[in-house]
Length: 322
Image (cartoon, rainbow, N blue to C red; front, side, top):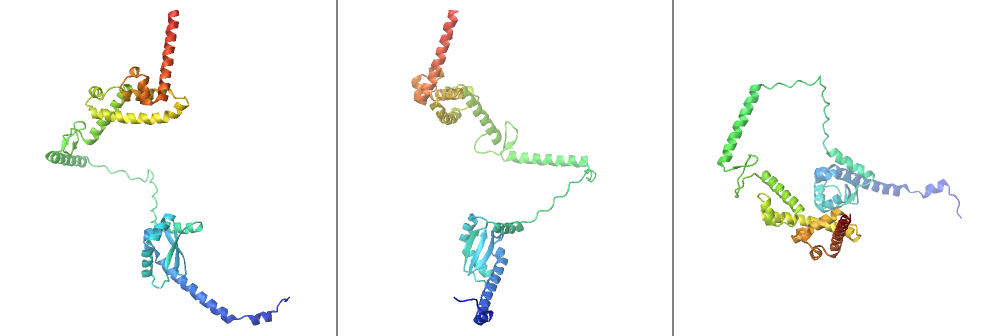
């Protein structure tokens, strides 16, 4: 077993020449990489553009591979597609840099702070907000002479008259409700677009309320009762109401299976039957209800009706006995 060696023996085995040469080669390589990375970092924004530079930053250059930090994985994917063009621009700006390819990685941890610093520096600083002036510092508003206001109103009135005359000559129409002029089209509309749309909405709302109260009415009967309503409009509102009730019926199916439907569910279900069958509730028998809603709904609705009728007959009998 060898014991401790003396310092003299260790110094004999030490060869400083080879180590210093290797160190010099390594130092030269590191200085070359550092210089190339510094030039790439300086030319980064001008080469890739301000938008890309705000969301990315060169991290290191090793063995010809430039590692770039990005703000997110989406940016990494996008810049991977743009890497050939970015390499070409960096070679033009830094011809001595040994760039071969680029690798993109999402910033995390402390590197996120570096990237945020680049993004924040790219933003222009906002000017400070001035402090509000106190009541004593505010200058009094200059009074506008009455003659200036009158002249301004006169000029505006003259311009409006000229504009109205021009529109009349071009064939513009005057709205029968609001009185504003609107550009004529191929139809002979008496109302402007906003007024016509407001009228249609009000008319459809009235038709829908009428259908909810009497769903069995036909389109012809509703068109006669609602002013200026066409049968096409009535059918459109009927289809919309039917679609909404079908959605509500689908939501009530769970309660139907648990035998826990609410009074609102019953009212809506009967309204749907009358809307589809075009019959009032008294004329809609079991076959009609089952054909429209199915057996489960038919049993639930008619069972309630039969129990209500039985309760009414019982009360009537008790009244006669008294």
